[in-house]
Length: 99
Image 1 (spheres, rainbow, N blue to C red):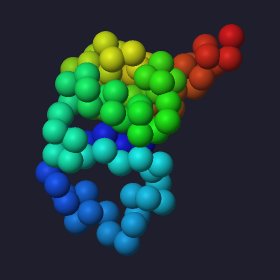
Image 2: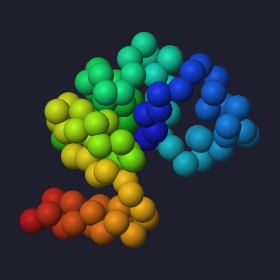
Image 3: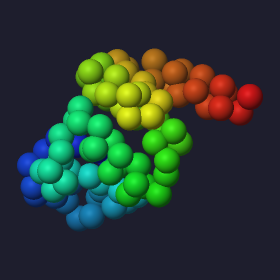
């Protein structure tokens, strides 16, 4: 899913032809729900729309404060710096979840 602090309609302009629906099961725009990251309610709505518990979600963002807020909301989180780092951190989380 995608949780983004954007204005209403902004994502539709950036991603035409239902491109978002192709890549995401749920797209949550802060302007549409009335809460912005790092408000815990935004993360809760995102998990709910995905049909998941917060503890079943892994949130990623390049802003450490948003990742910390996701952790406080019950999610696991990865601060994104580059793809190689992200992939390694995600693989570690998935391996730990299997054990």
